[in-house]
Length: 393
Image (cartoon, rainbow, N blue to C red; front, side, top):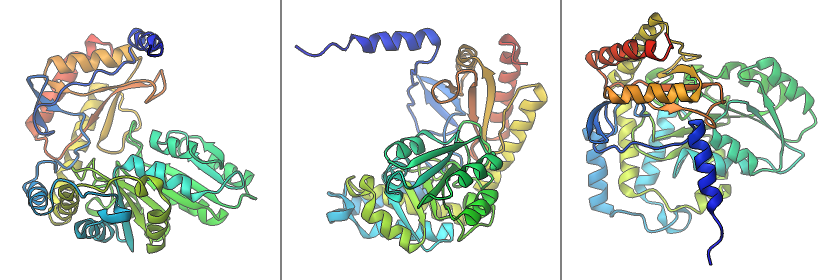
């Protein structure tokens, strides 16, 4: 007889009662600003596809050509027999884009965090110091370690310094922060963090998955945004957001690449990226570097949309980037707003606990370079229509 799993249904029923369950819609076309979702035309405002590169002809062609040449899969983990020349080419292009010595590509941003973080500390004689709003993949990576832990209030540099002082005797000190915080769209004060790290002898680890293609000159990321090249030890990135493909990135010195390659279990024990994906990774960076208009359009849309929402009276929280939350507070209100927008042909997902605190539910909108003025104005009209119904404006 199988084990009793009835508790699963009970837990799910609890989630439904609280409005905390997930029921993802079905996307039936490419994830572009105008798409088909659940069988109907939809304006997409919930994608990480900031630069609209998922369907760029150069990226798609690169994937097709590499698949035809190398096959659908690499046939092994990279550490044994799965590293191909196109994997190395993609990593060289990442390093060039980031302005660093070297880079290593993982299967995902998540696996970069959960694989690299545990390898950087040895035990309780070390300390990991983390912003309280860091991404769940960072939290999972920290949980896999035996290091002491210090959490500082969100972006509070006084609190960070206090933790550094209280762990002055630790062997290794590792400060970890998101670059762009994915639920609020605000930016870490990385310049101040690196100053404190230098003063107290700490390493700096930044997860820039939502800053890649968004911040910095031409989208090079948060390190370039603050002109901190050479002062950040570990820069984590992602191809699955602004770069429009899939995969995680660790960028830094050649020493960092060699260490990560030999010590990250999530890299050593995962099958390597399909050849077509590796080729598309390189192509997406080449497009971003040679076609800066995508980056410029993303920010034009971001500034316009956020200003218009605020002028209507919506609370956009801490947003400084193309992540623009519409704060609702209650999870039921957030779900109702998302549902009403969906009924009108706009996909803007509700973000509820445990992704955010129980009283911080919101509908998170995300801008794309592929949205035009008519798209944005249509969405804004809908927000203006639905907002009063839910007493948000």
